[in-house]
Length: 396
Image (cartoon, rainbow, N blue to C red; front, side):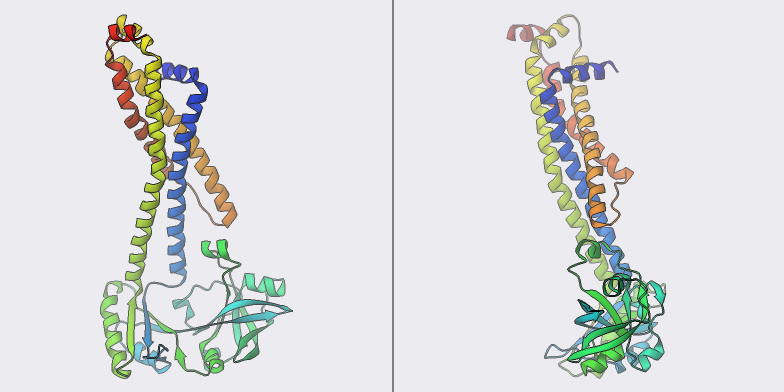
């Protein structure tokens, strides 16, 4: 403990210089910590969004030579009959406007089947889901989320209300039969006012108003435990559909699990790059420690000479200066940790999304600061310990 007490006393001698060094270390640690926390939170949020969209199966699309979709309703039966396919769910989307009670908003209209939970996550708060009878009867019913209901009706439970959708060149009335929980994802939290709301209607109803029996995509669900066979199922889907399509049509069955893995790897690389960029500030702080320690060695040359003249060993001098470097690193690291926690708390409140500093991230940030302090404090400490008493006293 004696080296630490001496180190603390020596740091107090030059309060302003010590404070500036601590601040540079704190900023470096804070930047590394915040980048790490936000990157991990972003990756978690993306994975959550992918989970909510059911990104775990196969997405099937068919493109004609003119760029239009070549998927038809009858393709659903073909796909459902294939081995390895437990469900095939149609997906049809278009942009439009939703209005009610004198208010309107841009919206993405989803045409879905009664088995839409294989494609999107709908947690009902009020009412019911779209049923097979709605799909078969091309009913003018819809689902909205609670935020949309509150914006248009000034209440969350809008079941039984009428929503007007711009379809087929005019505004068509739809009965609201269900209200889903509002999107709690980080993307919606940050940019909710720029992202259109979602309204869900039977896909057959949407086809009726668009005057086309084509589908945007078909989402394929495979039996549980057969995820490793997705590539084989995708190849069989492409082969089977290609036989029924014209030669100029291109059938594409995309393994969403594999694409999700690629996205995860990309996010890891982005996190690593951002962390390295943040670490540059920590390296600069480490150089600051080295500079301060070298100046301290120069200023205390006579003190070092006297200590060595009365019997102080090289190890004692080395420990004294290393203790100062370690103490600077730990104090600066602790300050950076507090700054990082405060900034993440502010960011979490601003975007209304839980962003937390884990114990491992906190310990990692302190560890990086400590290693940096030791690494950049070794040279000045060694230089001080190698001074000869006669040379040190003569230099003064």
